[in-house]
Length: 302
Image (cartoon, rainbow, N blue to C red):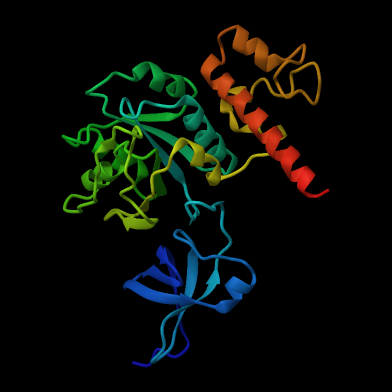
């Protein structure tokens, strides 16, 4: 059968250099991409919905990328429905600022943040988890040794495009092994010297569930690398803290950034214990960091 001029729709499941694996109805194709993408400074990535041109005696060619509903530059991923933010109860311990920064970035991109906690058998972290449960985030506990909790996560992400996001050493590879029995993802012990895990996942790849949907296992990161997931302008950070929503617009000043202004409805909710103090401290840090970045960008243009 001649394949000349035949187009197939699919999703990129893996991108390495200039080679792309694309899942199509009948399997997976190893593809190249049109040069126009590079010219337009577009890098096809895992999660992209694409059209592939099949021609006889030619490598399948990605010729079109559908409009993305969201995109993360690093790790390169697009069209995510949810991000599973994996934290361990100990070694490494949960980091409130890192967790809140990730949540804020994903909220700004309309990606549903989901909290997953490992190593609960070693140390109880329910008080920390309850901070997010009380903000109406979905929270899961898993035991990677026994697999307990894996089925609940699998049910929740079935049919969705999701990603495992987390610090190095929190157990993402072990969770992948439990989500896909028979898969052997390399795991590593925590480096006692550095206090974090060795990187065991080196690239982004989507894995398909039998019942529909995909999950990406992403490389681990250190705390200083979180900002690579995205940047939110200073005045927009307030909208990525969902517990602020009922107070925004009720402050004395229209341009209130909810720090030291008088008549601020948000800070009053913090003082009253309605908004969690730890979450608010993270918000203030993110606003401060974003302000500094804005200043540097402004100076660079002078």
